[in-house]
Length: 442
Image 1 (tube, rainbow, N blue to C red):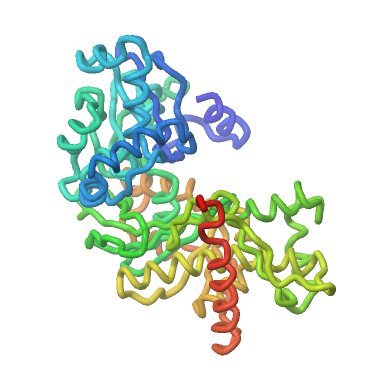
Image 2: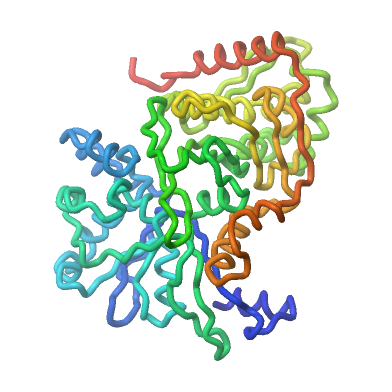
């Protein structure tokens, strides 16, 4: 609320001029609070927290992996909200009994904010956030009683689920009642903000990691290549849409590593400059599997490596190879998406901090042999919920208006010949193969 008031003060916009509020958030982070007072019973457990890994291993050992996959589109993992809720109920004294009596409520961060902004009048979330809890059936679009029973979570503590573009309640902002009209998890919001409205359209958000989503339309595609099936953002009254999601664990983080640990440069933005000081990597390949490697390999025992070093290797070669590694990893995920959907990628829309790196974006286009489109607005996540809220209250009439107003900063066209591309990808996959299983027991 304080940040919202600060933004309006700095921009000179009065509450009377605000037509609607949109909320986007990091998904999965779990909050449980008292219905009567609004006080949390425990600190929020964030999405990165792995304290519930043993619960997940028990779930897998009991044979529930396929059930979770079929109902939620996810794989059993401590990443999602379900095991975090269970941990709070099991470890906070009296929490389970109070939850069963309807005295405690669960919500992801969006739900918590709506509860607070509406003064406790609305306990509600949207389908994109619900789909990341590992409790939501993405076929019936409702909380799944079988999963709730397995995890021993009372249905009474769960929020009502709405479309992403819908009326959620009113927020009192300096005396003005402003409708909350758009809610979506960060990655689905970015997909909407990039106007990826049609099957086969995809976006990649380049941050510390990379998050790739491809719209699969009304088809709920089950991945055979280690990707997650998730719900895309839609408006109330529209047919539900789905997306395939893949994550690159280490994207921009490899540049941070070169900056902070290897001391190759002082500012992350310098990586682009140094990468262009050499014609190529000099045969060097960097695999930044610092915490294992994700789709399509899914090997938690993989570890990073630098290959192809010679006496002539310079720091510029390693910097360039690290930049290229971000693009290679994204290409692997997008290749898996194409295999799962049978749809050739039309173009890749990009956002996030690293999308400002022209060298990286050009190499991404080259290695994908696909156009890479960089919009003028890098903050597609915030834009997505603004568009959802605006469509809900009538600022824009339809999605075509959104498409028409998209502004492109630059399109990167592929220039690499096929022989070079195949050779580079082959060398990358050879290096990845060397890293797999590195930490596994002998």
